[in-house]
Amino acid sequence: MKEKKRFYQKKWFLWVWLIVLPPVGIVLLWTVHKTMKKKTKVILSVVFALWFIILIGASNNSSDTPTNTGNETPQTEQEDVTLSTDDDSENEAETVPHRDGMYGVSDKDIESLDIDSDFTVSKVINDVTGNWRISVINKSMNFEEYALSYYKKYFTDDKEIHAIVNFAYNTTTKIQAFSDTLYITVYEYVKGEEHDAKKLFGGMLYSEYQIYLDNGDIVKVEHTDNSDVEVTPENFISDIKSLIDNNTVTDVTLENSNLCIYVDTNANTTSLPIENWATIQATSITDNILSLSTQYDTLWNTITVDFGEAGKVINSKSDMDATERCFLNFVLE
Image (cartoon, rainbow, N blue to C red):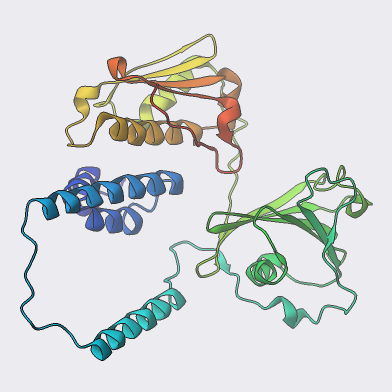
């Protein structure tokens, strides 16, 4: 039986606080709605943080500037307060709570492995990007547990992609950074790949992990076997309708590889400008669609979220971030 949501877990409760008092709404967004995609939560946080700034500005313009009562805090006292605040911030950063459902923690020091003195991180032969790096070890270890330490010691730029060949396990591990997260992918080692960028990461995929930079939380990426999905337009549309809000979406069509979702702008009961509201809706809708079986990708080339007279948000398959399976462009045209 599906567990009944408490009132503070429902979306209407979240939207009320996001609109009325955005700081409270943003806290609810990150602490209560943990199943919502990270990309969606980041966009919502930015939009409503700007909305809160607008509210503050409007409030300040409508009130008089407070007069000096003569009770100003002495300079030394002010400095003490500032120092205390800084110390509190540092302590808070050091004690970021661990996330629910984490796989483990990347908290082991790469130097504790007693890596041989000839261990080096080198450029990769035939790498046309200039950003690939390679290192070779022979240690019995789970690299994800050392990944955060490795990143801090050996990365010089987040554009870099590092490959760690481990002959103890015959694996090649890819580590790359994006925003506040490390992405770790473990492959079967292919003979000679450490000498040629064209062969690198060509082995069988073993496992994937996401590691958060703030506290080293490890989340294992689980892949669902979707081989039994019957890929038909009817099933695709049916699955989409089961995920989206039918009070907002009026229709879903698939014609000539263009998936179109029609949104009723009258559903915007907030005080947000239509551009901001449309961005939120388009993000949520497309995130849900891209969470479905990857086999459905053969049916569409573009996804259009149509807001009628207000405009459209159009994304093609080439706009999709393959790692996150999400779109980065949400411009109302």
